[in-house]
Image: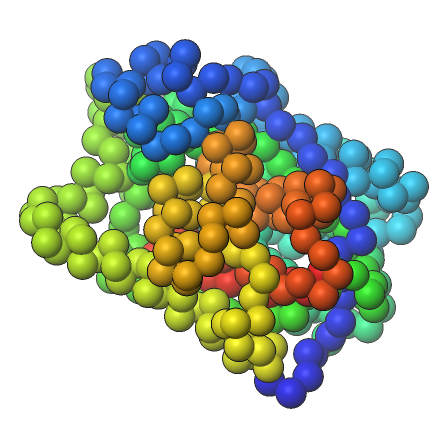
Amino acid sequence: MEHQPVKFGIAGFGFAFGEDQDVRATAGSYVTDPERVIRWNYHNFHRAPDGVTSTALATDAAQHALTRMNMGAEDIDLVVLATSEMPEYPYWDSSAALARELKIQEKQTLLLNEGCACGVTGLGYVAGLMAIQPEIDTVLFVAVNRVSEFHRNRMNVNNSVHSDGAVAAILRRGHPNNQWLATDQFTDPELCDWFRTDYGGSVAPVPPPGWSSATAPSGTETVQAHFQKDPQRLREFGELVNNRTVSVIEGACRRAGLSRADVSRVIYINDPDGIEDIAGVLGIPVERTNYKVATAHGHMGAADQLTALGHHLEHGEVAPGDVVALCGISIGMRWYCSLIRI
């Protein structure tokens, strides 16, 4: 791509997290084999108190960002909410609820729900809206994850400890720093049923008697069954996952007129083992990833990558001119990447 369709950058961040929980101390209350969870190398995760909703977390993060930027509701042209868990209510738009909580009146809102991906792919959607609507100058972009423990066991979905948190980013047209460069993504639709929750939707709105997320089969078991628990096939798929991640990073680089060698840091989903794997495939040191952030926060779905980017910026771990790849894999199955130039 010779030029970007629009130029915008991240001008500021805000954050909100559930209460800190020690993985080693709490794993036994979620699973019968806590050592399996402890081996994933998470130290901490966040659990929101009962009654604290995803909208509440998103609102807190947004207010934090607006306060830090000395901004008000009148300064926002578009509200985007990227959410990766069960909504609070069916037939309900939580992006509108967020705007209501922030008293942002008669402005556009956009709700994204692509699992873990939407906190990254959403930056590309914002670019598209800005390209066709020149009146959009300032966007409030919020990504939130709030696990519904009725529907999911946060330590038995996959090889991640699922965590509650939100990040808000203020996106400004023409902002010279932390500029979006490109977004790339693709899906393998044959795998779209992996990690789904079978109950609570229109097909099966009510679970059968005795069902509980605490004891329901995990998504990992679904994956293993797909490959008939064949170790060779599972290893080959693991390699495919990493190769596709590399491919989507390279696709974003091509769109931005860059090469993979131009990428200074890689921010993957908050999966310590997965981060080590992808760092090895890319040939970069783990220190140039979000490994430490992942162990400290747990997997916050759509909020992972922007939270890590904000952390790296605030701790001086990236420098002006660095190109950062926000990337990962999500339900769908979807591989995705957005590039940010610091």
